[in-house]
Image (cartoon, rainbow, N blue to C red):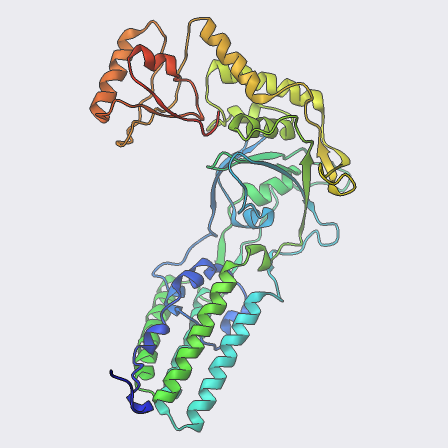
Length: 468
């Protein structure tokens, strides 16, 4: 069996590759890394090539969602990065509804949006700088010129990336300049996420436009011209390659030290990326308060329940019909939204209160603003009653809805009436062409093409009741 006889036989030339590993942890927070002035200090940084893209972004990353203003009707197909970090909606569950109130913090109403001065990012930056100084001293003491050159190249590379990418948010000029005695109109809005969840934000019009309807543009503070940036990017790439070459020719002892340090830095930056983003941003300009809701007398987790809670918090249902409507545009859903709006208005606005744990009555589970919930009305049974009434009238309407066909994934939109057998035959032909098993797979979040239609065709439908 082969083992090493002496330390000089230990080959770790691959240590140079450790300098370019860790792209995921660096790329996830590249914008916050280059937001602080600490990005200018010489330090060791895993995967520095991530901070030298061919083209720099012009605005912060946005979150996929649909935003609708309740009063003004403003719409947006995404959520700004700062608004998403402020609400911390990463863990919102499917068919869940939350409500928050956002106001300007009276203590810091005009505080700029910036990274926190004391944050985990400061710790990892100081760790990288300390490792750089330690390796440089060790290289000098051990007379290892190659390791010293590698330390200089890879340390000043991080400074170069900081100079090229340091940025600041473009100052947001308020679209509304309120007078001291003026009361701003309601800017309440509803955020609809792709998983069927809702977030209702209660705020004034100024806060709504600042956070949700104004683009977050980036202004690079040190290098504005693209030609200069590309020259710096090329120089940084050359420094990275030279640093890896010098590192491969260092002595074995220092190569081992480099390997340990890069493993440590990768672990530190991975931990930094795993933290919630609110740990890195100073958003004291705004104050966020959670609004609770009374426990309903049922425990369903359906789309209709989540939509009704959003209507209840928003005290209206018109927003659900604007743009990409939150509910299918059919008579059944229109009637249901009208009923939901009546019930929501009958409950009124949220009030101060508390509710206690069901198992431990002495324990207060939530205290603050609580939205009343209807006592004798349930969203899904009300929708089901409207649907059954439509069936009793011998009509089933499918309007602007998608039927997803089996494995092929093609879509079809039909306007169906039960006596229209020609349309049903056309539907049969589409199914035979797309799926030989003659099974129709429906998305029941829009439940209008039902079993009885398919039974006329002699087909067993496969229904997935995810939400209805």
